[in-house]
Image 1: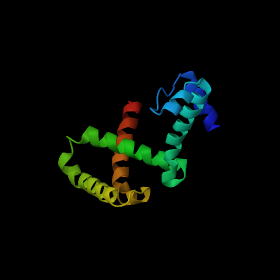
Image 2: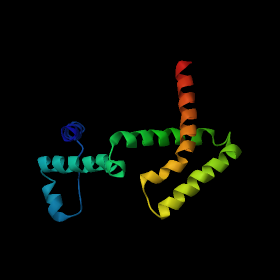
Image 3: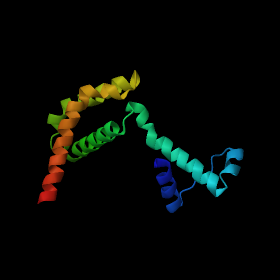
Amino acid sequence: MLYFNSCRFLFFFDIKISSIRIEFLDYLIQHKVINLFFATFCILIVINGSNFMDGVNTLVAGYFMLILLSLLFIFSYLRKFFYRLLPLLTIIFLYTFAYTLTIVSMRYRFPIEPILIIFASYSAKEILLKKIK
């Protein structure tokens, strides 16, 4: 089903791969059907690439939402709460930097997740209060 929907999306918006810079493959993707098949395959790899991190779509979607709301909070309130946020931001960035250099895995995010949840909940509260008013 995901393949069919991706094909429809690519066909409807006329999204194509114009060049791969490999002569043989460039010749193949000149044909519309092969180009659609190959472009759909590439899109599905990108979509399912996050599944390799944890194996479950909902966990990755929830984590991406948490990151998005946390970044929204950081960029919105950094000037206002800079000195209060500095220790928490230092923990987040140093921890992320340390495990990025050693072993990159989604499970190493858990120690910084409570901080991200606090940031995300504040952003969600602000968004909901603006919607209510």
